[in-house]
Image (cartoon, rainbow, N blue to C red; front, side, top):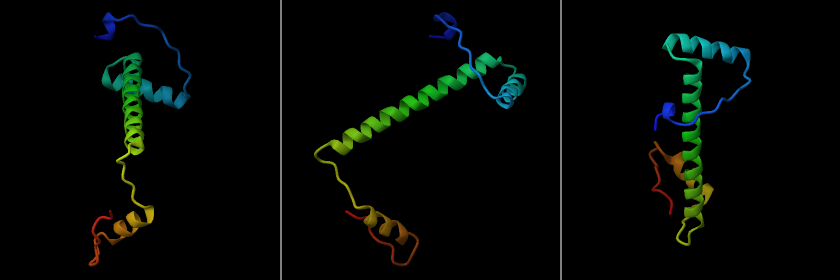
Length: 93
């Protein structure tokens, strides 16, 4: 639902003067309000953080599952160091 149709609240943010200037410059350049740009930035940040949190929870769940498979770090590093050489190794198991 568009934000114009939702209940809204004011939110004040203290920021470094340099950042405020950058926001003002971007606002003028894009022809958008500072509030619009800040809201869009916050939306994108929240979406990204939400995605990261879900990915972490899914990875932990997978790692904790009985069929999880782990490979020693040394084996992985040995395999990676072989990439692009004449003695390139098969992936470790």
